[in-house]
Length: 476
Image 1 (cartoon, rainbow, N blue to C red):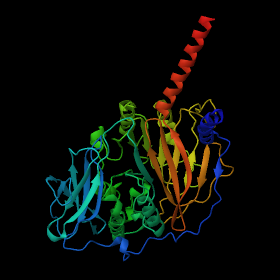
Image 2: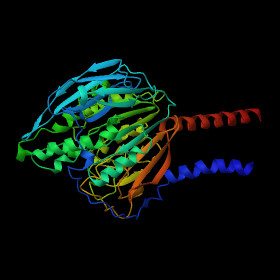
Image 3: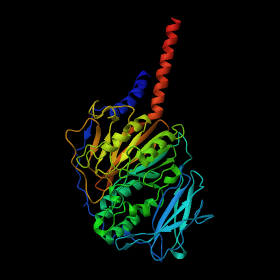
Image 4: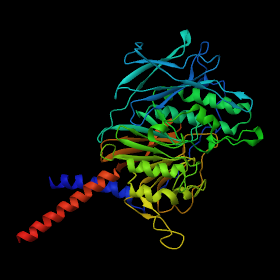
């Protein structure tokens, strides 16, 4: 019995020690023969246009309100506008409800987009499967989605995390492996189509191909969007200088529901998680709208309802790869202290085309005139995870800084995706899965302890031990 008790105590200690021991960073030496980092040809079946006159294509859904019982359903038609109507219901082919939306389009150089439809479907029941139908006549198409459970502190939920996806064969491997994971929604950390790698009309064409490429997932579960540098599309040689033009026309976000003034930054609550999306490429210093909004949103978080506080931002705050090294430093200087004060659990980023996970560390003691110059272990800090390894045509970022910094726990230059499975208010299971010769291989995993509830448990235990000790002293 004593041996069993010792094992039960030892196992979580070993796990926690592995996560928090800043002297045990690992740089994986794994090198795989990757598929070529070139986009899949447009005549490939993954980009197939659905059959029928004016058939809806590039179907995708995202969360439509703050608490998850609404979705925004989007699609594109090309032959004519058609209707912006969604028919839906709780049984297959029995569409007892309908919702009307709006249509938009845009030009980019001489490319004319299709007719882009966005429909808000709200007032949905939680934890319910809905079937929906879009389009007209024989060309109508049918899909389904599952709403999340009602907001609650111990609601289990599984997220996938993907970044910098693109539309190569490596991208396809990542997407197919993710779809086998059993995750219920994607947290996407920016850089969608990489259409900006093209010129002239091909930019718009590659946005269309990417929309068809990911439809087999995005039409059935919400992808929570954030923008990266490849969505900026500043191309003065084509007289295209409006930032995020294609992205903002195609991929809506429920920003108004979180009192944001811009679709580039917003927040949602889903199951037991409060998710904050930030924009690396919008102003964020003091007095800017994004900064003021984040301060207000962090104060709105209720950890008794949504214990898990997750931040998505494209540029990593901590990164030990030569690619984009220290690009997140300006945002770190502005927001890191807030992240620690509000006990953010984990921050997911992309941008660097490799995988990396940090220990819990901070650099808030440093300023330009005094303080420690290097990050130090900090149990109050979030874990920082870079998953910019979706598979895009720019290839892997294989050059890490040497020696490995103390804040870096694990790093590897491979393609893959992550999952975060929330179990209850106190812990979640995290996995990073490598695309290994067409197979999904779990490489990095750990138990993530909730910052708010774990610290409260520790405090209650210390208080109880203190009170018990005082009683023993008083009775002696």
